[in-house]
Structures are given as structure tokens and as C-alpha cells.
Length: 188
Ligand SMILES: Cc1cc2nc3c(=O)[nH]c(=O)nc-3n(C[C@H](O)[C@H](O)[C@H](O)COP(=O)(O)O)c2cc1C
Image (cartoon, rainbow, N blue to C red; front, top):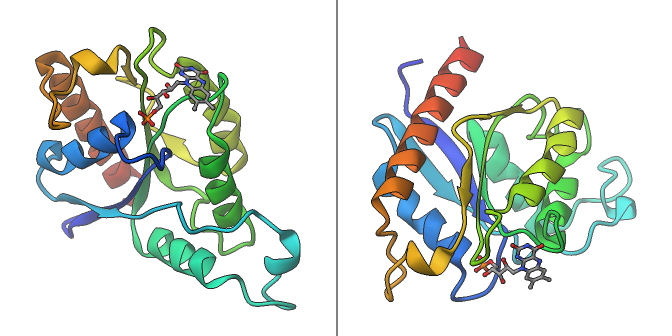
């Protein structure tokens, strides 16, 4: 696979000072050569409604179609997400539900990277575990290791939101290299 690999990338947090969005914004500088991110957002998606998700009957809402189009034209997906109540934040799950239906679902069989940041101790591990049945149902190909479980976020970013922790930078770089290898293997 010689062409540039493109990844649809999004944050599961909408708040302005989000640690997860800080990590998302740090990623372009940490990517291996030949890979780029297409940033997309879940902020404008309506709540999932199957009555609006039946192309034969009704057109999908514009924001949904635009979101699906970004996923369709990219080679893989990357989520950076907080853990809410030991699980996937509702807004991100809603976005995945919108992208998951139909034979033309742009998530089916896609390589996927998942990262999470929390100010607390457990590094979003329970959110990440909650994702695995979703990946399984959609036949997605996750990067399993190294896992990106970032705890105690306040010590990993500076006051300008820049990722400064050397060990975190190193493991994220290694994860992204494994992600690249997985995408290349998948596309052979
Ligand atoms: C509704 C809600 C539920 C939360 N549940 C968890 C949780 O289960 N585990 C955890 O580590 N933090 C939890 N938190 C705290 C978040 O980790 C913290 O707010 C974090 O900064 C959110 O990510 P962000 O900075 O990217 O917005 C929760 C926060 C909210 C708003």
C-alpha cells in the first residue's frame, strides 16, 4: 500500500478543555510517515432514530451523511474518548450507531484505534472494554497492544494543553506504528 493512509479521527468529549481532545490534537505530530488524520466531530449528530436511517424511505440527516462520508473515504478510524460511568460516552456511542447500519456501513471490517484519557486512576480501561463487543459486532480490527490508557491527565499535559509526558508520547508513537502495520496488512 503505497498511497497515503488516511484516518478518520474524533474525540468522544465535546467540552472545550477536554484532555481527550488535547490528545487528539497531539496525534498528527506523532504519526508515522505516510499516515494522516482527517479530523471529524460527533457534535452535530442528532440522536439516533431508525425512522431516519432507512435510505429507501427517508434521507439520512445531513450531518449524519456528512459524518458517514468522512468514514467512507478514509482507510481506518481512530477514537480518543473519556470513560463515562465505566462505559462509552453516550454521544460517541450515538455516532457509532449512526455509522453502523446498512451494508454500506463505513465501519464494517475497518481497522480501528482506541485511546482514552482520564484525570483519575484507571486510564479509561472500562470504557475500552465496553468497546470490544462493538468492534466485534462490526467486524472491526482493533489495535490491541500497546493499549493507550492515560491516567492522571493533569500530569501529562502542560497548561497550554500540550502533551509533555515522554513515556506517553513514546507509547502513543508505538501504538500508531502498530496501527499503520495493521492497516497495511488489512489492505493487502
Ligand atoms: C458523566 C460523566 C461520567 C464520568 N465517569 C467516569 C468514569 O467512569 N471513569 C473515569 O475515569 N472518569 C469519569 N468521569 C470523569 C472524566 O474522566 C473527566 O471528566 C474527564 O476529564 C473527561 O474527559 P475530557 O477531559 O476529555 O472531557 C466522568 C465524567 C462525566 C462527565
